[in-house]
Length: 141
Image (cartoon, rainbow, N blue to C red; front, side):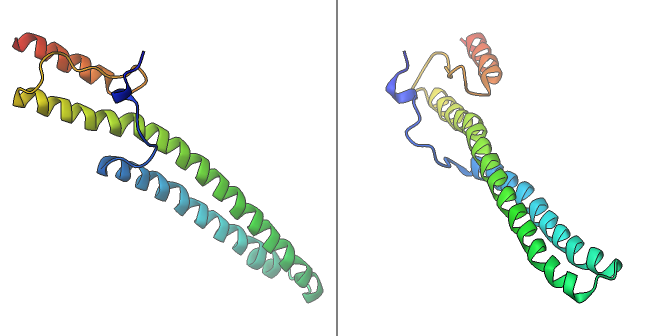
């Protein structure tokens, strides 16, 4: 049974480390998607219309189709950015939260406020590190 203290109180960005992870994920998804939409738009307008020598009547018909294509691409990219952002937020919680908690627990042990092992939830990352720190604490006794 989980203690109330172990549960996260909110699902938001907790610390600077988590902000850096999420900023990296955001820019690594948004910038390529913007470049892709611009390239797609350029491909439809300039390459196809210019290289094939399409008459103006067909070009006027092609413009709304190109705009719809770009709009569909933008909507698809925004949905994928949102899904990647949610996934990155969940993963960063399992990494940044335990790291912050580990630092706090280590500070309390160094200050002499607490003794004993450090415990993490099974779903959190850094469990292997905590096991090694607990082994070190055991040897120091």
